[in-house]
Length: 223
Image 1: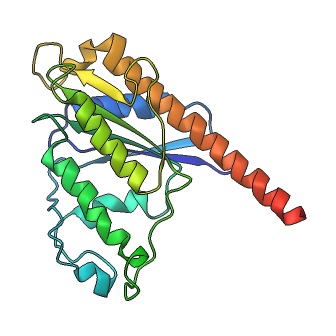
Image 2 (image 1 turned 90 degrees about the horizontal axis):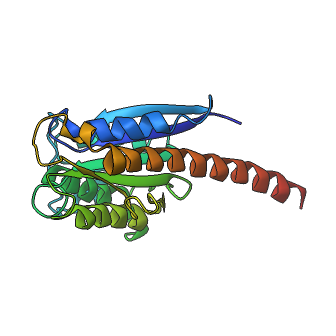
C-alpha cells in the first residue's frame, strides 16, 4: 500500500501554541512507516476573506491576490489522506485568518453550482479531518471554534473524527492561566493529550479508508 500523507495546518498568525498542538498531533500520527506528514503555517501570510465577486465562476479559480493559493496547495496537489487543522480562539470563535482561509475554498466548488464554471472541485471524500483550538480558557469559545471548523470540513466532503471523552468534537488546548508562546505545553492532561489522540485517529482512519478503497476496487474489478 502506498504512503499515507497527513497535512497539519496552523492558522495562527504566530509560531506559538497552536503550532505546538498541530505538531503534537502530527507526531502522534506516525503510527507506522507508511505515514508521512507535512506542516503548513499561515503565520506571516496574507489571506483575504471571500468578497463574493463570483469571478471564480468564470475563470475557474479565485482571483484575489494574496497567499491563499499557495497555502491551499497541500490540500489539492495531491489530495492528502488526512488533515489536522488548528486555530486560536480570540473572540469566542475561530480567528479571522482561519475563517478567511476556509471561506476562500468556495472558489473550488463553484463548478458544482454553476454550469459555466471552469474548474473541477477537489474530492475530499476519502480525506480524514480533525480540528484543534487553543484559547486562554478551556471555555470562552473553544467548542464554538471547534464546531465552526468541523462544519467547514463536513460541508466540503471530508470524513471527520473527534477526540472522544477528552475534547469530544476536537482537541481544546488551554493556556493554563498564562499567556506565553509555549503555555499550552503545560496542558498535558487534556490539551496535548487530545491533540495526540486526534493525530493518531486521523492516521488510523485514513489507513482504514485507503485499505478499504483498495479492497473495494479489487472486488468491483472481479464482479
